[in-house]
Length: 224
Image (cartoon, rainbow, N blue to C red; front, side, top):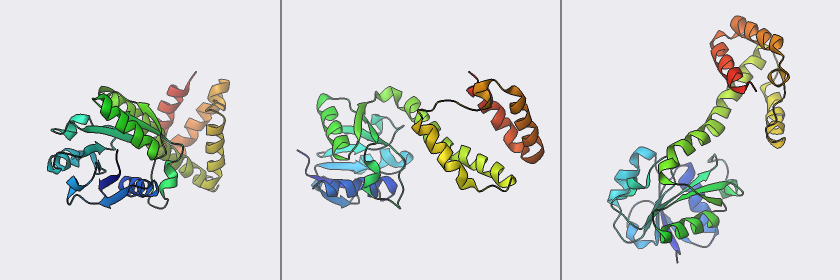
């Protein structure tokens, strides 16, 4: 039974997960000092630092990281280990409620580890699903496309609206409705209206030439 946790890392993930575990009644401490005094040590540091942090943690407690792309082998030589990756974008401006309803990838190499990982994901307010360790990179690539590149697309679209002296916030309801509609494709490509697509490309060539290659690649990928 996990009743106490030590969270190593005080960034967006560390603060959010630590606050949620405190809400759920666990005793939570922040920092790597005396890590052996907790039932669970949760590593919430950048991916490149996970292995070095793991080596510094004394054996005994359960050890977990929250990276989406990093293998469980980064937690060597520990054997009581697992990973829970919240499939959610986190910000310091919000609290643990931003975890509610999100999905969480759970990975472990023992049955007991999977049980503990599923418990942690559920306690955090996530909807757990299993993720094989060898599939982490391709899974995380998908997550990055959905989360990170959405920001890229918004910024590119906002630049073009600015060219037309239209406020960028006008895009937000459109983007939200696209999600609410289950990502149904509409617009000129869905209609096969290549004349309009060519007009877009001509406008980009004149007003924002650096965005023309991006538009071309996305249009090709979007083509039914």
